[in-house]
Image (tube, rainbow, N blue to C red; front, side, top):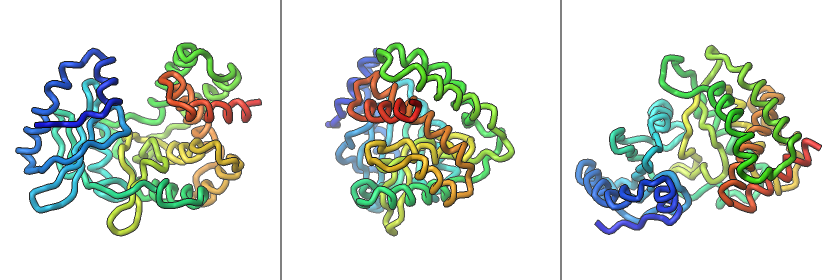
Length: 295
């Protein structure tokens, strides 16, 4: 099978010492296509931790086949998609845990390309996140908001040093304080299924004109975790992020202080990570805003 593997996927796999997997990948895709009766189309560019290709099911339904790179566990994503059952997220049709493969509903263009007004995009993102949120059994094998906060708190100082200290020490300290507050605030009794990375390129148009999210991280956390991502994104728009936070809080009834904390966390962690991998100007924009807010 001839397979177009995007450069970002190829670079990630080679950098992690798993180049042999690239030779195996056409065979993996071919075997999944046989088992799930798929016709394979073009690859999607953009991601770096999974190969994502167009597929068509035997009945003509448009689908997407996603295969995680070695070391990438798609288990939490699969759990999140099963729990959502097509409401707020793309519909999951099949999965193969051994080959880290998911077969999902194929959606249309991203929200970013279809809605010009930023405030309207934020409202639509908010609404699709609300559709996804639902209670989750604490025994289900999903990471929690507290676990995420602990992981970020451990990684952020080290990543900041590796990236050449791309923002002020005060900004890092502010993010660490927010992380500690959100860690302590986690409550299994009120935690819900959240997406973990709600932004305009992760919200795609469905056949009925609504929007659904793709690539859920799969977390059991407070809803503010998702709304904080909406506060993080597009800091170059020039709007007041505090006002944006208050609008989201009013629309959902979620505590504005918690949204602001998560917005700070996502802004600083994403900005430092983007700088560490050379993803610019995104990283610089996020951290310039973070430094301004801290100052």
